[in-house]
Amino acid sequence: MAIGRKEREPFALEHASVATGNADGKILHDTTIVVGSDGRIEQISPSAKAFVPAGYHHIDASGKVVAPGLINAHTHLFAEGKLIQGKDASPRQEKAALALIHSPLGKAYLAAKVRSNVKALLNSGVTTIRSLGDAGYEMVALRDKVDSDDVLGPRILASGPMLAIPGGHGDPYIALSSSTPEQARLNARINLEHGVNAIKIAATGGVTDAKEVGVAGTPQMDEESMAAICEEAHEAGVIVAAHAQSAAGVRAALKAGVDTIEHGSPMDEELVELYRHNPRALRGFSGLNSTLSACLPLVKVSQEELGISDIIRANSEQVTSGMVQGARDGHKYGISEGVGTDTGMTLVTQYNTWRELDLMVRYAGFTPAEAFHAATQVNAKNLGVDDVTGSIAIGKDADLIVLDGDPAQDLRVLEHPNLVIARGWPVWRPKVKHIAEVDRLVETF
Image (tube, rainbow, N blue to C red; front, side):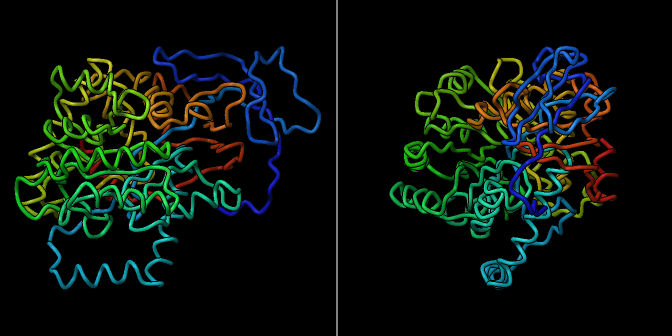
């Protein structure tokens, strides 16, 4: 992934069809896109009228479709999405694992793993990611290397550890815990001082680390503590996500001012209004990432094949129907619904972002064009990066993918991009290493 040079080569993608990412699936025919040495789009015009300056590299895109790069708003980079073992770790094992994670050897291993996983995301066509729950600040370090062009990678919004209650979701492996609003505010400040540009709260219990049936979706952090975190983050211009898998948890998180809800629940009139007009959110509204890729495998694939415990299965069944209904409600009521997959969780690989779009079509009522719109323009707006990415426009970064067909008509063309371009840097012949067993199980539903 090392770039090895600081100067991008300017180029022109000529004679392409351009999938705009609009909700109506609009496409531009025989179009040329000119990209400068700063990695930004300089020109979009009919090929017959295009002017390509001398010294620019010409790329013939005849018969291909150029589209905005995908945005994945919910990733974890410490795992690949392989099958997990359902046995709970003992306190002694947990203590040993924590010591290893935070040791010099563990940090070096984790840095290499996240770099490999980020490469898989990029090669699959994802040009912007947001991490939501890291072991430490390894994603901050990688983001800085990408921003300085030392490493080729997607745009990164890095959260660092999530913020939870003691023993709550994510604690102790990928969370800082607190018991009071003052401690919660301090933990937010600690993350910000480490350079994060995203923050995540565990508003409710989760599935994979639950030790009892009924934990998933149960409210954990109180509204006052979440509000303190949001205030601290918003003062720094940083948006806040909340893991929330029940109506009670979603309601408290929205009232506290979170900017995106991760996973979600069925919506009533109050929740719909809070999503649309949230006075405590940074930009006056809150988005939703339903992460269907993370919940559906745990109930659609047999427990025997997954190898998960009875507790994980029961907690999955407890929240999945609500998450799916929340996705449907979000589409029905015009919520700003984006795309996040929860990469690294069971059967959620780093390279299958396109499958989330497919699930939104199959289970939540989206058209393919609307799902692709959610993964590009809507995600960019929800994450506050729509001034630089999410669409193909003059002055924006060249975050592009070159495909064999129109994703607004057939989402599966996203599975194998011919070319990925991140901030003007090309990834020629992008390839990812597939996990055959995971792919087989996911294909079953």
